[in-house]
Image 1: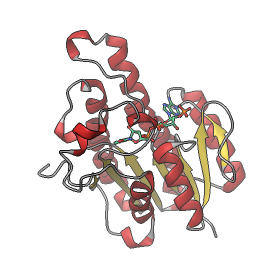
Image 2 (image 1 turned 60 degrees about the vertical axis):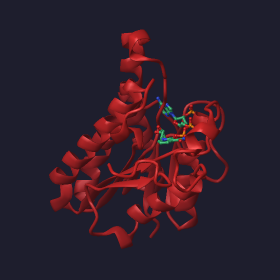
Image 3 (image 1 turned 120 degrees about the vertical axis):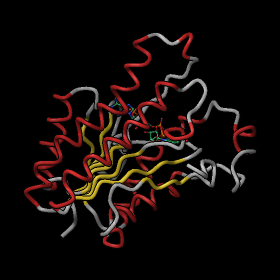
Length: 231
Ligand code: NDP
């Protein structure tokens, strides 16, 4: 039977690539979206991960449509870049709320049904900057580093229930999020000398969600063309 998968922020960018990759592998895939229309061929649930009520309602709909979520990909994320000296407190807390507390909200909602199933895969989408740091991104880097401690703690709490929790740390991926950046300057520091395609992250997520990754938990997998080597 097809597994029930939920990808947050699965309506565009890396999340959409992950959703399409898992759907092509035979899973029943739901994605969250905030506005407009859900992507064609995928079950869409309206959900802002900063709202506990939205998360609850989204899971209820996904469970009714395709059964308890067996694979959760916490991908939704935002940036609000500025140097710390100029950063308002709300600019810090808004990014933490979406990227880190958002992952907490969906993982918390997913965990009990996974415990009941006695299996589950949780994949958190972090970033190379979680470990390397990034000027102008104290809020974002803190949120992405937080996901590593969060995920590793979950891996310890739920390993005995057959649930794995892993983190992927992409580098510089071609999406709306990076569209405004000076790609030439960043690419100079990437050993592979280019940006990643969203599908290159999606294939790693597919691996972590699949049988071949049955003995991997608490891992942080870089998908960064070598950008973060040494961390
Ligand atoms: P995009 O900006 O292209 O897409 C972000 C996605 O997150 C959208 O689907 C967006 O939904 C969703 N989202 C944002 N905030 C919320 C929220 N509060 N509730 C629900 N959904 C939300 O980004 P990417 O595809 O590039 O990024 C995906 C993930 O990968 C993010 O976590 C990002 O931090 C991470 N990442 C990206 C890298 C890159 O180089 N692009 C590198 C490393 C990590 P909506 O369409 O409604 O806005």
